[in-house]
Length: 285
Image 1 (spheres, rainbow, N blue to C red):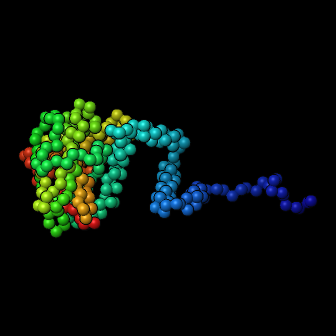
Image 2: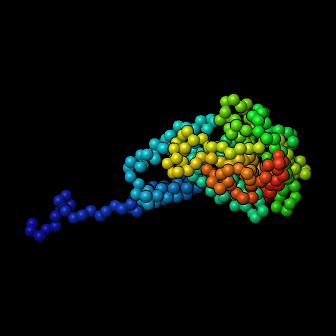
Image 3: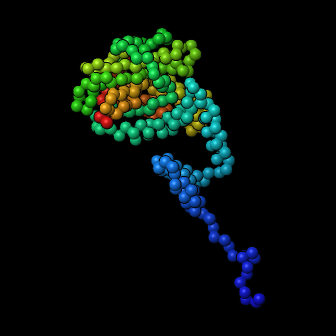
């Protein structure tokens, strides 16, 4: 009939566009009823930020596939001795960010830093003053001592220091088949006076693992893979917030360019005399 409207099958009218904002809304609605509310919150936030990231950089298909390949390679590099995903997180500064968020502690509490990929749970509990050195790789002897205190300066009884570091050849035991397992590791528990003391060797600067996809990422971005000399510790006690931290050698290179962004001024100490005395301060829960 003349003047009648065209049927839907033959209409040439443009269809309403479906925008990236519409797509985001659709995706978020699909995740609007999670079984676990916290999982849902995190998932929806991740979706929003991933979409915004892709739009901000105008991510190409080729770049997306390259990213998938990179993450696949990171996963394939992980095993019982090596955690490439933690290494990636460390070198992006994300691990340090997580520590800063989670250690939003009162002023006066010891500063946190990164956990790193080389910790092993359940190291041997040792007597105060004992050495964590099993295999003598050389290096300068070093005594680390001090007191674990609360914010009022009172000693904390029963505080545990879980400590680990690289050997004098720059390698952790999990990297080096020539080292005895659990070399350079130990746990120490304070008595009523809160004091601790143990023997080790002066740490040296070392490169984070550089032979995998994270090393390739660093190279592509013009970054080095070196960490300044340090020793690790997690300090914990019942009724207090645990602290993951390091002590750094003030004479080390790379204090101003740590590959994992972990250096804090308050954690830099003089190790040149073979003795370091440092008090750790914990905040109550």
